[in-house]
Image 1 (cartoon, rainbow, N blue to C red):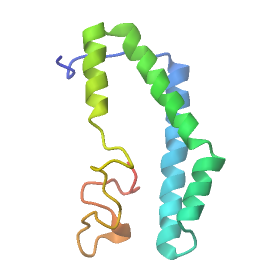
Image 2: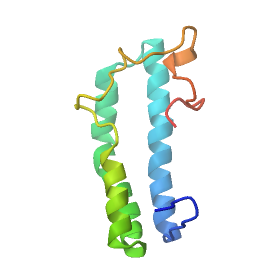
Image 3: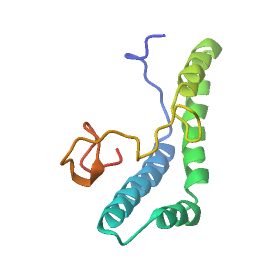
Length: 123
């Protein structure tokens, strides 16, 4: 399937809700990363953020909103192709994941960001 020219329509209020959640996560995780770099936060702080802010449920909800829009507008074959692409992602706890200690970061790279990452460090 050629995805370069395809467009999917979604209700604006759903897009805005997903965008708000993603923005909260990106900004908050960037701030937590800065706190970790300065020594005022640790892994427990990040874990507590994930629990307190209900990150897993909210991300699953965002995924569901997008999936519903895709399923409503694509054929079963196209949806199956996208599902297959999603299964190729990196998942924590699998053999293919890389822990931060094994990730290569160029020397002198501020805040341990990899090349090509946005200045926010998470996007």
